[in-house]
Image 1: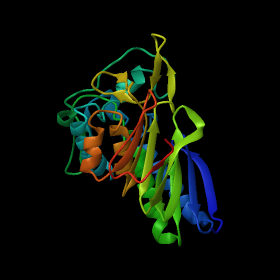
Image 2: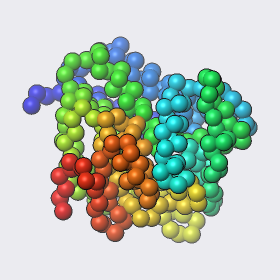
Image 3: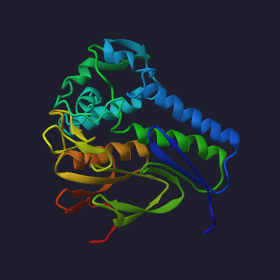
Image 4: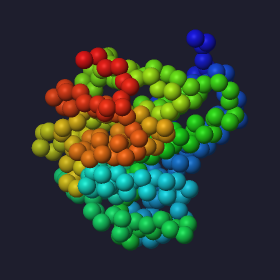
Amino acid sequence: MLERARWEFEAIGTRWRIDTSAPLAPALRTAVSALIDDFDRTWSRFRPDARIAPLASEPGAIPAPADAAAMLELYGALSESTEGAVNPLVGDALARRGYDARYGLVDRGAQSAPARWRELLTWTDGTLTLREAATIDVGALGKGRLVDLVLATLAPRTDGDVTVDAGGDIALRGSETIALEHPFDAARAIGVWQVTDAALCASATQRRSWPGADGGGLHHVLDARTGEPVRTIAATWAVAPDAMTADAAATALFFDGGPRFAHAHGVAWVRMTTDGRVEWSPDSKAELFL
């Protein structure tokens, strides 16, 4: 196998790896960096200058970002499949549990997200409207969407295989065998998955975890209906034609409706429970070390 050029950098709070057949031109690197920064400046709940930031303090309307319809419509399917467990207005609940803009990690108790979010948040006629102040959080699928955008920027301007990996959310032109990291031991894998011209996204509760006020553990995967962290599933992996769909499925799979969402969107998957059992979809091509 020919050695590939690698570009690694930090952005949006995670480590990025971009592999290409030849080094990327400086202008193309600049274009990718600008794309990532623009997405972050639009959607990040951690940035006071984000375009969505004013909606967290008072209801109102802003010009709808280019990604609003694609992401929020898929959120609708996520919410329906998980019976409300996934919700784009979960940002305040996450902040209350300690996952706030300052990464304070101080638990102030559970808070549910607005269950009627589809009445409160609309995106029509080029306008994104929020009828009650709330913090939008697109973490269930936003990183996957951004990975797709980066690959779409690179693909027509590079030859050969391209891999875009943002902290475990991976989109490929070409083929790569990807290890499925064991959620309880980062030095081990529970299997490998060969992915070709598709995307694999992974999520695990140990990635971002901290102690709760009651002495128990907290992490970033909350049930929006209760504001409590999920306790049954430890890690998920999902393969789909695009990273946004794979990312959404990887989130959904922490909940009972996850397999239903995955089936409806043509996603193959694997997940591990907190007691170490491994489950997978009938169409999974992963080679598991069981």
